[in-house]
Length: 186
Length: 79
Image 1 (cartoon, rainbow over the protein chains, first blue to last red):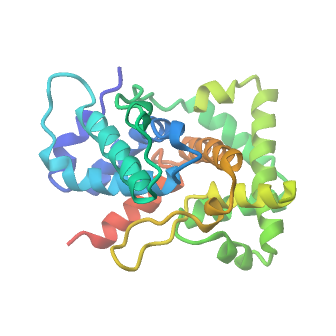
Image 2 (cartoon, rainbow over the protein chains, first blue to last red; image 1 turned 180 degrees about the vertical axis):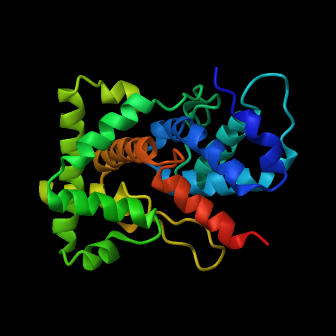
């Protein structure tokens, strides 16, 4: 099993690069833990806030002999932030506490073959969808879509249609390559 | 709401960009997410899961745009 706690000492010492390695492995599990509340809280906002809190509390994380102590702590942080948001919105129900997964799924190692297949599929995208997808990647969550569309001289609608098209074309291409991307990625 | 309008909101809400609350700097709910119904929000979550996984798979350091956004903020705020 992949144990992301191999990065814990460096993270606790304040090394953002080590935290990046941890985030790369932990994000899918933390995001999946918020799925049951997807209709009631904005999972992306909760997850970003949770990751910041995890960075802050990591120096206080004490390994307990089981793998992925920081990931388990992180899942609790994300869960508590989601429940706080429901409380703030006054929509917290009695069974919500049990609905949100407290135990995260085990992290998976990256697959170099999948990476190559995605790059090949991305390389075959038509110009406009490729440009929209690249703009999203390069902005790295730092700019809203309105700004990215403006940079590409696209209307917002056109930009969003191109992002959507890029995603669907990459998925279709992966399927043609025999890649079960839903299983591999999610 | 038309299907086209719903799809536009889903794609926006599925991006990793989030505004910051000027009071405490917290990541705020995306305005497009607020305009979606429950099905649209679930769809946005699923699209975000796929996009983030694709992004991470092709990133040299395995980071999605969510990871990159958070790391950028940590590096900016690091004393």
